[in-house]
Structures are given as structure tokens and as C-alpha cells.
Length: 443
Image (cartoon, rainbow, N blue to C red):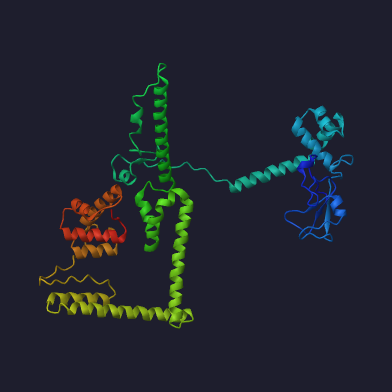
């Protein structure tokens, strides 16, 4: 017999019988083989051998009852729970009301039993103490220590950081120039007076309602910016560039839906497509192995090495064909020989700059010892060598183009030429390089 009966005297608190749907009264039957959820039957349905779906009448069962003593031989478990519920309902000390609610015990019996077994019982006192200690130990293990946060950045007005953050002031959670920045102007001359006519009063209230709707739209846009981390656009674009080009294009296309699904769901969506892209690329590589008749990864490594060698040979033949069409130009031949030497030594080949006009192309700029060279990556160094641009000037031009792109949300070649007063061909090469590397976007 299972002694885990219901703790309540209210029949509606007990689970219904699965046979007749009536509220269960103790004792009742619980099937030991069915569940979850537990399968309960009243005694009448149990004696009739009620069966339902997977439940069979020959299943093992448990008798659910609370008619047994716990702390005192004259008090059953059901009466113990009824006493605790009555004290919770009537309050400690109102023993007459507690006895009236219980109906089976007198005022003196309720008070004596409660004080003896629930207040002055050393077993319960030690159990409560252990529970408190266990709760404190659990809280100590899981509590997060408090550390005072650093003050949010307060960039000076019109500084580089302030422009990168679009004028956002973290300490105030506001922008220097808000969306619909002049919405308050419509309210500056409104004054509610007692002698306003009904129509005039309704008109003023409509203006206030319109202003409230504009404030809601401002807050909605500000919330989207904060939730999606768009305050510092430079960091946001750097995060975008960690994805492959195909995923970046998808990111750009799906950005307009980010405000609908929320930041976490949007990031999960993009991450799932990035994972799909990686899986497709890996599947394509494995299919290429299978087409070539490769069945193990050892052979695959050999195949990749031979494929790389073939690509290098094809690149050499391509460069040779490029030089042959300018064979009459001695400088072009010399440049091809230098490029071939770079390839043989493992360096990145310099860009072939052949000229049909017969003019000798300028040699690449030597960046050794020039200030700012250590701030450039390999591709930027190669660009500065080809365009013959010192690193300091390149970094200044790059910063100006990036700032203008962040302000405008994009940049056209004509705008870049207006910002950088140098040779238009050099400006074009810098602009194309920054577009290709993802530093700026086209307007």
C-alpha cells in the first residue's frame, strides 16, 4: 500500500478518475506500469476491471491513501495536512477557527499537537536548520559575485568615437540627434485653458496623441539599435566580415527582417545558414574526392597537394601568355621575370602593369623603414607598393573614407574622389580595394 496520498481535503484538488472522471476519494488506485502521466482509478472502476488504451486490468497497482499515523498514533497523515492547511488559512494562535475548519479535533487538541510536533519538536528544528544550510550552500555555489561596472564611455562631441557611435551617449541612453528630432516643436505653443471650445480641445488632444505616437516610434527604433548592437557600426561590420561572402550577402538581405524576429533569433538564423554553407562546401569537396575515385583521407591529402601543384603550373602558363603579348616591351619582360621569381620564392606576385604606350612603369615602392608600415596587413602593403603610396597617407585616406561611409551608410566613387585630392587612378584603386575587402560599402 502506497502511503503518498493527497494532501488536501478538497476533492477538486485530487486527480480525476480515468474511468468515470469523478473526483477521487481515498483510498484510490494508481497503476504502477502506466504513465507518465499517472493513471488513477477509483475503487468502483478498479473492481470492474476498467481498461483504457495501454492500461490492462492485470497491471500491478498501488493503493493511494493517507490514512496512517505519522507523528502521533491518534493523528493520521490526512489530519496532519489538514491541520497545517487550517493554520495557514486561519493564522497561528486562532485555534478555535482551526478546530472548526478541521471538524475532527478540538481546540485544545489542535494547539497541543501543533506546539508539540511542529514548534517544539527537535527533529523538525534540526531538519529546518539543515534545509537552511543546504539552501545557503547552494546559493553560495551559484551566486554571481557583484562587481561594479566601469563607467560607460563618454566620447567628446564630434570626436572619432562619437561619430562611430552616431552620437550615442551611453550614460544617458540617448542620441545627440534623435529620430524625428523636432517632434516637440508641434507642442511648444499648445496651452490648455478652461475656456477652450470642445473642438479646439479635441484638436489639441489629437496633436498630443500624434506626439505620443512619434515618441513611441523613436523609442522603438532606439530599442532596435540597442538590442541588435548597432550603436557602434564599425564593430558590427567587423562581426559581419567573419562570415564568408555568400553569408554576408544573406546577412545584408535579411537585415531588414531583424527587427521583426529579434536579435537572438536573427543571429541564430544567420549562424544556421553559415553552418549550412560550411556543410555544403564540405559535401562538395567530398563529392569531388568521390568523383576522382578517392576513398580515404590519406589519398585526399595527396590529391589536394597535386591539385595545388597543377594550379600553380596553370598560373605560370597564364602569366607567360600575358607577357608574350607584350614581348616587344623590354620593361614588361623584366617585370614578368621579377614576378616569376616572387612565385618561385613563395612570395605573392606583384601586379603586372604593362603599357601599350611604351612608357616604363614605375617600380613598386619600397616600404622598408617607412612610418606606419607595421599597421598594414599584407594586402594593404601590396596595394601601397603598387600605387606607390606611403603608409601614413594611405591610413589617413582610409580613415576619411571609412568615416564618410559610416555617416552616409555607403560611399560612391565620386564622393571618394571629392574627399581624397590625389590622382584619380590611385583613388579608384584605393576605393576598389576597400570595397573588395569589405571596409566600406557602395551607396
